[in-house]
Length: 227
Image 1 (tube, one colour):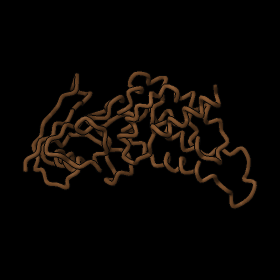
Image 2 (cartoon, rainbow, N blue to C red):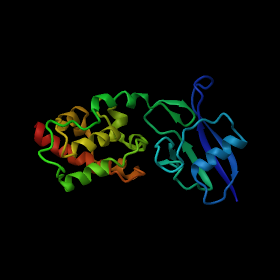
Image 3 (cartoon, helix red, strand yellow):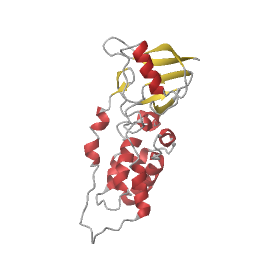
Image 4 (spheres, rainbow, N blue to C red):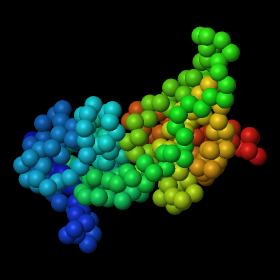
């Protein structure tokens, strides 16, 4: 069965703007979108540029917009008709390859490590498992940036609202009962109050980290502690 894929191409050295390029391929389930991209590069467009590493939904590098929805290309099933674009709201380096540098630069301010204020009272340390469940949920995030692409607030207020991915990373420590930092103040500084609670970030999260739910809880806690 013949399939057709339209890929949004862009080379900053030669192109003034992005353009779609179409390719026909032999559609054979259970192909993934990444399989199709690999096939296109091998047979038709050796200069096609995109990211990917683990092929198993763990590295978070292969995110793209497939038929209008953010997904990991290594886990998303291919379809006979596809349109593939790079993730939105971020600078495109070439074709489907995006620049993650602006988000990497934000990480130090989040202090993404356990900050103890005092040593455990006794060993082994007792942990509130209900709170720890939220920590584990936030820890599912693989930083694929699909949620950032889907978020409407990131597009409108990128300098005020950090976005669902950085806030989910912050949530790991916000909900870690062992952590002693003022994470509520940090969440407020990162614009947690700007979230409109549309839920789009959770709808595209490939690891079910539920950034929308975590942000909603942080938003409520930050309003109470900082208000």
